[in-house]
Length: 268
Image (tube, rainbow, N blue to C red):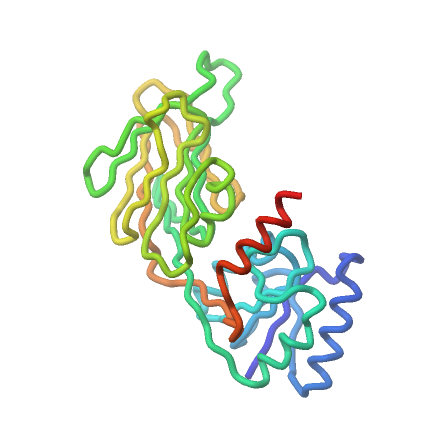
């Protein structure tokens, strides 16, 4: 088995966890390579990601494209996407050496202006600031498989995977989806009408998003990273990507236990 470790070697707050992890891998006879940029990833079977959810999101799409399984060790704050906490490095190494299962998470593919972007968590469409624009809100039309869902007036919309349903979409009032559900969720951001509500739809459908005429431009962000600006007349098409992101699954994994633990931690 070939193992890579993706982390920031310069981050002092991770130094203790990182040192313990490296020592345990060596003691177990596991050869590994350390990467600070996801582009450095070599031919590995498992990528240990040391950090928080943001670090995992940086590596997830490239790992998914390569079929590399991710094992996350939380050295950050919330850690919804990690399988182990920072004090559980020994358990993580034992799992790698003893055999493990994997679970697949769906990926969102966004096509706009001839470009393709991917998101493990979510795609956000929000008003692109224009000092000369009169409006402070955007009007977005959403269509699923050619059928109009709604015209949403507000700050924008979030299109989330089940994985991302516990992220920005949740903060905006969206539902929590279990990771095994074959669905996406369309969540309005601060809508100006009470009839604009989150919509859960099957991930076999195509969602088309476009500005209603004469509205300000939209900025697209995938997993929190700026992608592009959608000018008037352009549109985005969102569908399920043809590859998943695979995560190491620990035997005692329980989504609802983790959900309660993380939400209670988040609410403090």
